[in-house]
Length: 296
Length: 224
Image (tube, rainbow over all chains, first blue to last red):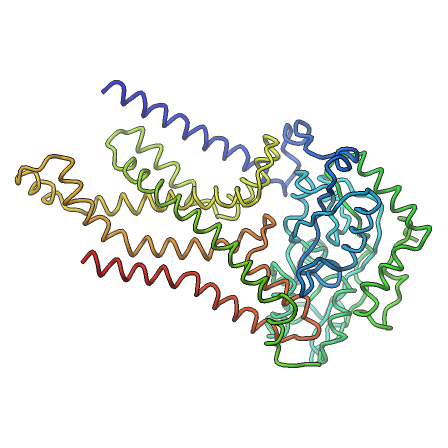
């Protein structure tokens, strides 16, 4: 009898320990939106890899989008393509290592970089103050503003047109934060994926869809019946690679890389290879591409 | 240029990629289901113990898992653990772990419910017939419990298979994500492709879950 109660007590203790651990990590893991309250978590665990460690392992792990053409997507043969991927390939080449891609989603990008699960996030990652508290951004390689696309029958041309209407956004994108912060009157309908958001617009579940202007311009180009009524909303946001906070070795390497690539107009070549065919003649590469990390 | 969109399924290696994605889904969910069934039965027995500590522990565990959305659990297991302890668990390991924890909790409660639903007179009659505790469980209680457990277990299993679509958020490319990748690449040329791709994903999920339903039907007949 005594023996079995001891066993039971041990089982109980270990189970509750597991539960306590669960509760602890819940605070630092999922509550990260509010503030960087994880006091111990960030300094203790330098899980990031320095440039030397990456070179030694022979492989750089880069988080990209796998379903956001033309920035990061998987083609019909299963290989990664796009503006971000073109840059990622070059990073791997200049590091002299193989590249391993990790498919990320808008909502999980910060966590991937913050925990060092990937060495670099190259997933059309817009630089914001909130994000900069959790990850370190390198120099920018692209800039965007927001655009709003809507059906021709009821084109949204200004923010006022959106009053009492439903606006579709994708979770975790700049559009979501922008409208939540600056236009609280606009009703938002949020989706996890671009594909779902477009379907919602096509099916009339919302009155308009907002995300980066490049994206909606490209989409409107091939979807007759839809117009980009607002093509430059908000401040010009920059898009930059992100690494885990404190990984100065990789951050400096990336900054030097971006500066030196500017000399050969690398990102214009990237634009021509990946974006030009999608945006057509309507777009001006200089309104999008940032060379050498210098935003004018 | 614009066609119905069904050809998107057969462009390049698209179809093979979908099937590969299904294999990821099936691999994660079946491993988790098998572990959940085994651990769930043990947990169910643990839950029926009269000991107050055992009860409290199982109560807390069950409620914790039940209240937490699976997505939160996935984020804790994948990102949270790395943040707190620096343990870099593989995404698939995290997924199997979370789904096993979830499955064990739910399965345990099902087992507890099934055991409790066997009326006391079944035990009494067995003892009256001279059976000992072991025989009573083996010949009287367990067969009846299994029969009661079957339908809810099948429900849980298929639910787990479908819920694995959440693992995309920790970077695992399973069948639904492959579908979304295909839809996205083709969203300019084939705007209607989503219908076909989601249709194909539906068929693939069906093919994964249907054999389980058939197995359940067969077992239910056999154990009648």
